[in-house]
Length: 226
Image (tube, rainbow, N blue to C red; front, side):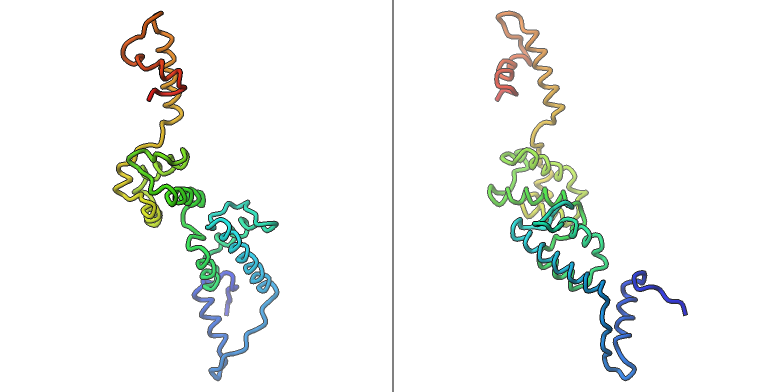
């Protein structure tokens, strides 16, 4: 009879075989074999990592970490990244332990998205929901640009991403009214160039009509006139 190494067996099959092997012929539960040192080391490593996860969570409020994140001398970001990569192989107890710390410990989208969301959430907690129709006024520029990008791609977001955004006031209805946080750098450069050329074309002692009528204020203020 051929055999498949445990590491290559489907998880339901492994669980079923383990359950059958734990019962003796007389129906009594058999004594479990002493686990190998590798398994004990794995348990110890997980316990240490989980402790550092709790420490990081208390300090930062979430587990959306980059791979190079350190907690003291412990390579926490690398540890969590490895756990996330093999999340499918985690025991239910380990999954529950991580979920108890942070339900979003292993998001199905990028960690960078989650980190940007937390910044937007923190802003909303202090200053209230962002105003999409007003171009996210009052937000940091990068934060406002990120929020506008989510609105423009709202229908393509994961349902849970949409729910998270709704928690800070960005619903489907709000997304449809969103205006950009600011003009792109290219647009600002082209506007400045246009005003510069227009300013150069002024006749001595006068001011051209049309687009040039507000150039003086734009040039002196270093940007568009208010």
